[in-house]
Length: 393
Ligand SMILES: *Cc1c(COP(=O)(O)O)cnc(C)c1O
Image (cartoon, helix red, strand yellow):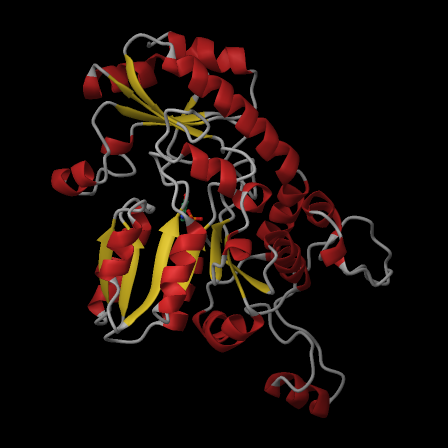
């Protein structure tokens, strides 16, 4: 195989070709390396690999050729230096915390992040003396005001789930760096096909590969991407020791998921935009949250920061929880599931599912109303999606 510098290629090409190191079998499609360990040439070779003086596989908890290919491909696509794969998105976020934090440290996190991220920071890291303050994603002054001398990193998702609020990554990266903190972006909703946080100054990007990177709802996985320095010092040692490793089979599924990422994201975005505009016209719908709509509070920022507006649409019904549940139950095709980023359209009622464990006060602060419905727009025919929603509208 020729030695190609994939940095010279665009994302669509990297997604299809980067990362695969062809073996002596000349395979065109990458194989699944189902091996837990690797054989050394002799005792000295083993010793050199263990000390890191010589590159080479040792044990699949921390290196595996199929997983390496996924890591390398995603690193190119995000324009990051190094990527490490994990067993799930939450395992990836856990690794960032375990790698970077010590007792007494502090995190500033946006209020609207994934529910388990809130619980991980608050309940689990909290047990070990790490404190977290939650702030409004879009209020840069609140981020800055929340930073303390012991703040280690700022953590955010943009667009947020389910309200699709947008944070100014570049502005928050500047605030983080001025205060000697890292900015960590969960890039799950946009994927590198729509937004590349490193180009805007982020220090670490995390992914739930479970969502759009897979794209067909098959496997659970995650990834952390960052500079060689951060990954070598803080994340790789934790992966090797902590062991929340991605399986080779899952890496193989994600590799093929990445191959169609750009074209899928474009189709998701086009269909979501169409649906958002249509929802705005429907009686009983009081508000539609979609960054592509001029009515969205950060519409201009979304245009600047993202190459398209994403596949998630949420909307509020005047009839509150009763109407939301009726609408969800009246669908016949759309899947009632909290998962997202699938070719299948999914529908969920955040107030009683993904955000149901939050207290009513915290939920109100996060802007999750009882009449709110979230849709992850899939790749079925757009008219079929509209017709399915019309049954309950
Ligand atoms: C799903 C999700 C996660 C967690 O990922 P898992 O793969 O389910 O562990 C983290 N962040 C966001 C934004 C998510 O949607």
